[in-house]
Length: 321
Image (cartoon, rainbow, N blue to C red; front, side):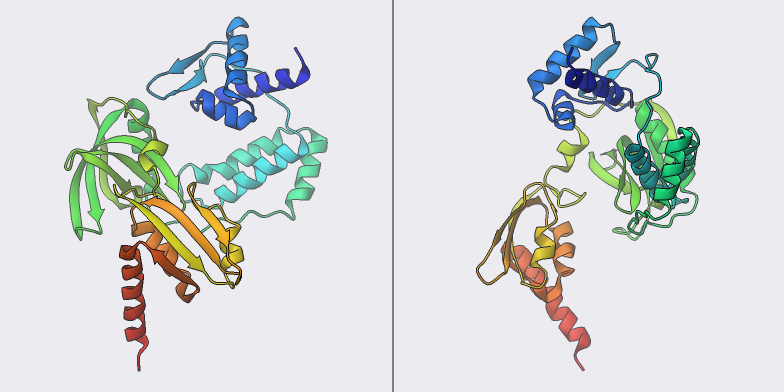
């Protein structure tokens, strides 16, 4: 076996040992090879007796939990990257899971070879990873663990939830499909028995929450399939083609970021930027556009243009002497 293939096969084993489920497509993307190559590598693992299997409900491969390779030594760059990111996440001590990251980073650092540990300590002293502000919720640990267990065991949840939309506490019974940390807070997404559709709930707004003995079947689609073309996190069930024109002042900043998987940008002769994207719902992108103030113009759809114009009129009225 050539060295490159050996390295690739070992990396597949490492990925499958993370307890995440990897499809052939995601492995191919991770390793930057073709799907055919991944199939050949998986066949080699099977011939070698590595106990991996395909989980149809999760749509991915995973290695049986009883199989482990010996620990892999990290080089300086790997150790520094892992510790820096973990330490940054661990700054949020009130956020479940992320709050444990700094402890994990210290444990990893303590097990590094002395030469690597010294180099990491020296390099890390001048390296900082800053995260965006996160939601402040007291007593979130209990809700987090309840939801995490319910998602893993596929048990129904029942609780009381503070609904900002309904402006009151509501009773919620749901099948929790996914537990997701998105930008600033933890959310649970699943089928709400009250409305019989997929809803998103912020963990910090649960007043009460408990796991029931009742079980449910795994969802037929993945989280990515559920989110679809949502601008960020909340699909609304209707697709829109959005066209924006950004001024010369902010155009370079907008162009250098991959905001959405469908986005297309084109520079105009005047230095302005045309930004086209197809999104599911206008609610989320509306707030993003508002953030650019008078440096952006909505070309279409009319519904979004009208909403932005109304917001501008209201802002002007608020500041009028």
